[in-house]
Image (cartoon, rainbow, N blue to C red; front, side, top):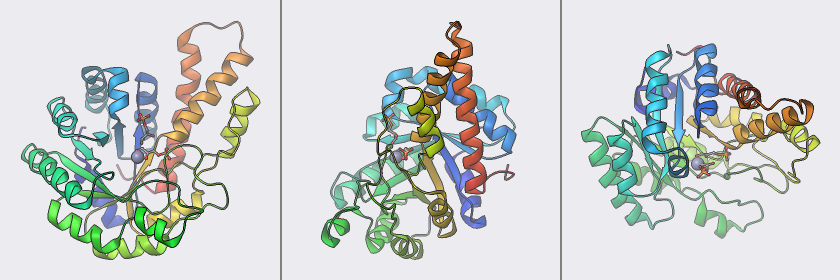
Length: 305
Ligand code: G3H
Ligand code: 13P
Ligand code: ZN
């Protein structure tokens, strides 16, 4: 069943669990996510970025997710991840997306408000949920207090932003970043900032850049030839704590990419005679599915659908 992010995130916020938003690019990643959700009886957000739309084609990606939603027993949303402009948002809403992110985090505060408000007005008139972002997801490990304040989300500004835009959920910057190289030293998130943001903001909060970069997957990929020196993610106990402090949506892309890559590398090395793409990609689909299921248990969404 296709629903909006509000349908998924408001119960999550009330009951203090988080719903995973998993990035998909193709049939294999979509089926991995949907099958995991069905097996875990978990609500799920299927996330598609503008570059995935360029890769797969908007009608194809929207058609695949809508078909999966019609045929599955769990509620899921079709969500635009990191939409950067009004035109992309409009096209996605026309294609049947039930939720959109407008990422104006690179803009000045007032410009971010203006763009987000414009998207909210359109999306709400069509019954579509909107996520926005305030603060920037850059590595902040070795930065000064002033540099950190410049990129991490300011709690008072977050309260004002949500009030003035009417946005349904807010992505916050507390020290996470996208990709497989999140920290050089000890992983550290600004949980006190998250606590203050939660006090000021009444809508569901979102954590981007939340992959854990599991070392066993990295080791497997490296064993079969990948180069991933220094890859490091968010420890699972940090994710649990973020959920306990009020994060209701968690975005995962990198861990699926790693699982996919490790599985394909292993399969091709261990089964050199196989050249059936279904067998090769099937191994990657299974590996991604196991990662998604583990995330659903970690986030507390298993059994909630
Ligand atoms: O933020 C989301 C992704 O991890 C980046 O995805 O390469 O599809 O733009 P992309
Ligand atoms: P990761 O790179 O940590 O998986 O983050 C993904 C994300 O935030 C997608 O929007
Ligand atoms: Zn993101």
